[in-house]
Image (cartoon, rainbow, N blue to C red; front, top):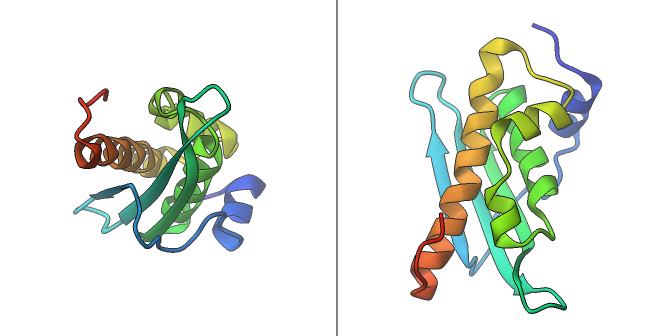
Length: 133
């Protein structure tokens, strides 16, 4: 199995790694077949237009090279985006930014996209807002 330099870089130097105390939303997903588990934390803020944005985002992942790299990449793609923009990030966007993933590791990008959606949905639930997911 071969990984791109971008994937190896995100694995060796993960961005936004770690937990978050008092996160506004948390998403946790896993794959029972491969054993990957991703936990994504986000803090919501507002931009100059007053729109809700991903002001801070962190992850904790137990898994393979691709699981850690896709978790790192989703945090970079979502940071600073409005919640609606962040919800539009697809697993294919993650894989493309990493320079593609081996076919047998595409599920890791699906997990990362799902974790982000779950964290945003959790934020809406915690805020008493109507789910927009």
